Image (cartoon, rainbow, N blue to C red):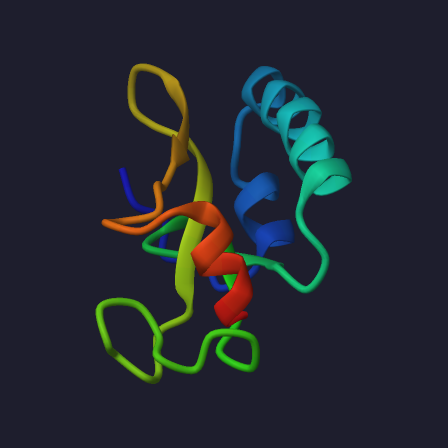
Length: 99
């Protein structure tokens, strides 16, 4: 289920207390390990972690106005999920040289 809220704080506020507590624990771990320069925000109706356009101006799938998704955290209807994106068709080292 995609949320329509615009901020992470609003997303967390709309969760039931048990789900909020679980999501916040995972979120804390993600934030402690998020690479420098990467950003947290709302993407695709869930908490998203992205490579901002100032670091990767090509954008997601060549869309220069959409930051490159890196990971996402969501409370779905019947479960909670962590979505981890991969580096498509290239090594991580080559990707890091470009940003």
